[in-house]
Length: 252
Image 1 (spheres, rainbow, N blue to C red):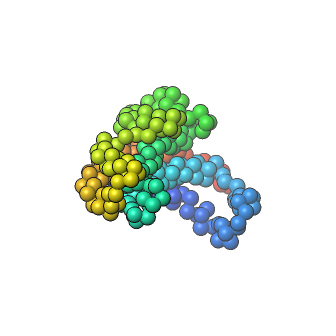
Image 2 (image 1 turned 180 degrees about the vertical axis):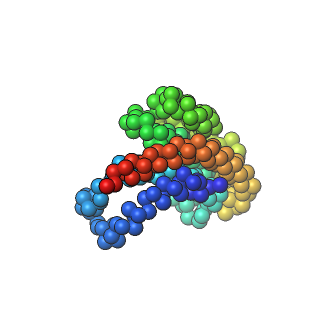
Image 3 (image 1 turned 135 degrees about the vertical axis):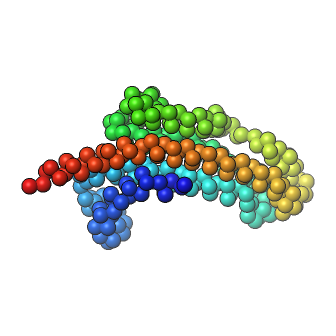
C-alpha cells in the first residue's frame, strides 16, 4: 500500500473536499500570497483539525516521492561528458543525491511526530514537537502509537549520524560501494583521460546495486509509516465523529 492509498489520507482529504471545491478558481490564481490568504475562508475547529491531519499526511507522501526521485537521479547520470566539462563527476552526482536521500530520511521522523501530535490532539506547539513531547507522551503510549514511532525512528537511525556530520560539519559520506568510481573520477580531475560514458557503463552494476539497497530501505520505511497510519486511523475517526456529533447538537 502507498501512503496516498491509506484510509487516513483518503478520509482527511474527503473531509476537506467540500471546502476545496467551494473555493473559486480565481482566488487560487491570485499572484500575491498575502491577498490569497486574505481571501481564504475562516476554518471551523473541525475543518482545522482535518486540514492539519491532511497537511502532515500529504507532507509524508511528498517526502516519500522525493526519496523515490533520488533513486532515479542516482541511477542515471545524464550527459556525463557535459557535466565533466563543468567539473562534476559521476561520483559527485551520486554522492550529492545520496546526501539528499539521507536528509530526507531523517526528516520523515519529524513529520511522523507532527502528524501524531495533530491526530491525537496533544496540543504540543510545533516548535516543541520531539521524541520527549510526542513519542514519550502518555496518550501516545496508551494508544500504542509510541511503539510505531519508536520502530520508525530506529529504522531510520543509521543515517542520522552521517547526515548530522554533513549538515553541521560539511563531512561528505564515502560510499564504499563506489570507492573505485571515486578513485577513477579523481584521476580524471588530475588529467587522466577516462571517457565519462565508458565510466558510466562500467559502474552501472555497482550503481544498480546501490539503488536496489536504497529502494529496499524506502519500502521498509514506507511499511513503517503505514503501520503508524494504521494506529492513528481509529483515533482520527473518533475525533472526526466527535466533531460531527457536536455539530449535530448545535443544529436547532
